[in-house]
Length: 445
Image 1: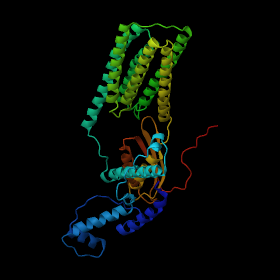
Image 2 (image 1 turned 90 degrees about the vertical axis):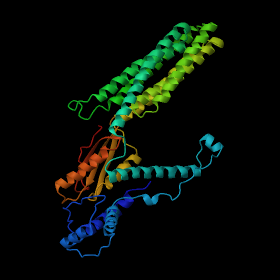
Image 3 (image 1 turned 45 degrees about the vertical axis):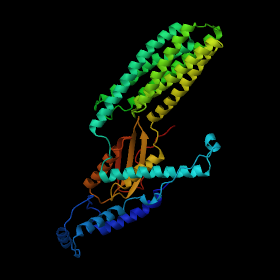
């Protein structure tokens, strides 16, 4: 990884040098104003140099362009820039190595390729931060486009709920006629889909209804909380299926179905499976976490429907105990899958730190924010729901007026909060970095 510590001191010295060269007034109290492109006429520049007591210099027709180029080079001198680290030619992907790829064994070439891939991803993240620094905003969707996506997400949720109700009615009929334990377990799964769908719909509505007095930072934590309740209900279903399957194995019942019963059972279960598969593909095209939860639920339904149908058919043709065994397998799969979902959402609620790669991007953005920043004391990002809270401590010159320091900190806060992963950013301003931590230390005893 490219370390900031190795270049921070050099860049800091470059900042000091460029300050002395760029403005004779800069005694630490006069702010620098940054403008990406200012049209200055030769006459205006000459008058300015006379007023500043600087020597005059001759101008030609391209004097303005030369001034802008010099100004741009001076502006970039204090910023971190990793453009020179990019490879001149794109690296070709290595050809498959046969047995090694099949077994998942990483050779030396794979490790090197993975390393360079990580470096490329890091540089792409830095380029994204450069775009935010230069433009002041991230290129994204307009308000109309966001509203359009929100409507399509609502439509996906409604379509999923309607499909769950219709398919639940069809599977009730199949359960009554077949009396298969695996089919009944799949039907109970559909019942909980309806209940879980109501939970997710309720959390989505709660997130949209804002109350700045009772919930001053919003209700984004309702999203992982709703998914957590959803997963708990699904795990409860799995335990109930295991109990019923064990009871069926102990009773050793074996009921065969007639040919016509088997035909419509296969037709109903295959139809339900195909509809669910289509909903999986449709819901996975969205980035909303609730719609993704629906996609995961539809995918589990595909698995449970296939297992239930296969177990019911094998129990009819081979052995009767295959039906409850298939139900147990289905229940264990459900419990394992949703247990992983529970752990993931618990981590998002307890305030887990962001990945080091993401902290690198934030540090890069903070350092390139303003020329007056002397040190970066702290960069911290942690989950608080589905998004991050960010805390940044920057060090500014001690003689800088409060108004200028406030403007620098506020601009950095607004810039950080433009990142889609960040819900709220806090920027703390300081004049030195050798002090003890401001916050009281937590004690576990």
